[in-house]
Structures are given as C-alpha cells and as structure tokens.
Image (cartoon, rainbow, N blue to C red; front, side, top):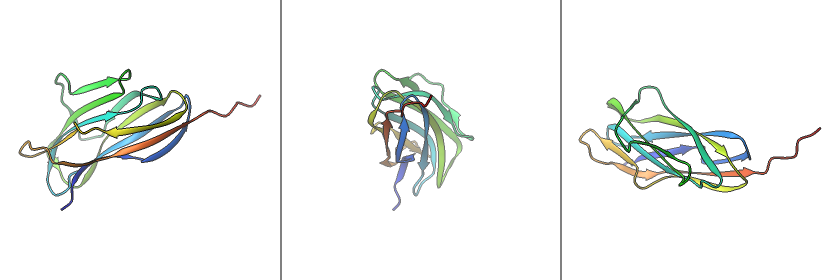
Length: 143
C-alpha cells in the first residue's frame, strides 16, 4: 500500500545569507483520491522567513479563518486549498519562497497537523517531508 504524502523538494539545499530560495510542496495521493490539502510547515524563524506562498495551477484557495497563515515570528506557514474533483497520483501543491536571514542549518518540516483529505473527508496523510537548508555566510564581495 502506498501512503499519501506531503513532500518538500529539494530535500537538501545550500544558500547564501540574504538570498531568496524556493521549496516546492508536492502532494502524493497514494491509493486514494485527494480533494483538499492543509499544509502546515514549521521552520527556524531565526534563520529563515517566508516571503510568499504560490498555489500551483488547478488549486483553489479556501478563504476560511485559520486556513492561511504566515507567522515569521514563530516559524509557521499554513496553506489550505481544494482540488476540484480531486486528484490521484502526485501533483505540486505550491511553492514557498523563503529568505535566508543568517548563517546556520535549518529544517523546514511538514508538521504533524497537516492533512490530506480524501473524497469522504478522511485524513489519509501517511508520510510528511522535510528539507534541510544550510544558510552559508555570503563570501566577501570583490571590489
């Protein structure tokens, strides 16, 4: 049995301080049809900050209180959207653009409160992804 999953790509990344970078968030349906994704990402706010989240084509944002959140003070991103008529297989849910604030190693984790909802409204999330981002000190600029 294939587990439904929310995965971050790439899983390993090195970026210089002060730069922006992106992580793609993909949803894999496993053996069912998925209609709604609630993605909750957690990250180290001392090292990273979310600049924006862009839903992939085909997804419809759900404008309910608590379904969208960017909290760079606590290191939390929440995005919730539906896919009309559902999907099977794997599809991109969206892309997160981060800023690298200072040097260090940070994990961006799909939190346990994330959900993949099947056609009957049941949560079928079986596996959550993680990306490890190494923020490197920017080399000195040349005159």
